[in-house]
Length: 168
Image (cartoon, rainbow, N blue to C red):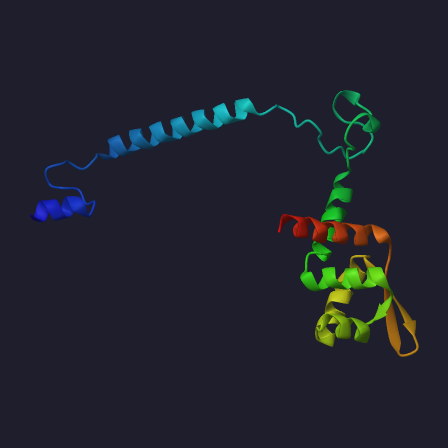
């Protein structure tokens, strides 16, 4: 009974000899070789060069193709900046702020009233949007009135919201 319990728990039974260090090494080498072969097989399916690499000059792709003959080749800095911009929009409150500012310029207390969010939180989100270049503020007396820098970002937000609503 004791041997059956040991076999059931996964422990080696006394009847089966434990693998030697040499056998363990051979088994590890076989697994590594099989893994390397599988990875090589997967890589063989992929093209050697991506079809549209990012070109730092932004003027030519592979084989001297001009930027106008296919998808645009972007300098890495542009892609990084676009990523930062999208990251700045990646909060529900900031999306709501952009939608509000799309309708009209607003000061902080108007955004607080419309969105039912605490003033410090609205101010914090406005600071993120301002740092990212999405909004700018203009002082008018004791208030700062915020507006969108341009409509491009409002279109991105509106399209994202519409996309989500279409899926539901």
